[in-house]
Image (cartoon, rainbow, N blue to C red; front, side, top):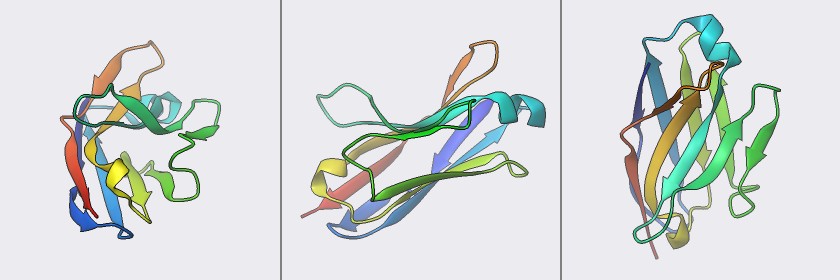
Amino acid sequence: ARLVESGGGLVQAGGSLRLSCRTSGIILSVWRSADMGWYRQAPGNQRELVATFENSGDINYADSVKGRFAISRDNAKRTMYLQMNSLQPEDTGFYYCHLRSYNNYDYWGQGTQVTVSS
């Protein structure tokens, strides 16, 4: 599978961005059964979870983004989204989408840069 993120950019604090993660090379049944989500990495920091869909149907958010970010997916398009509202400078970083298949293969996108100015 191949994952390609888009939608990053420069935005002022309080603004919004919508990230997309388009996948290819994956059949629908594998997509539907996969765990998937968004992670981010700021300079000098480790990669951290932002929001995830679990195979169980649960959705998880990092405490720092709850109420501001929303993860969604379009199964027909095999595309995942991250709507980010009320962005703050501490949200700055590279955002990566991730997919773990039912047989535990991990796939990552190349990342998209999000920069929030104060």
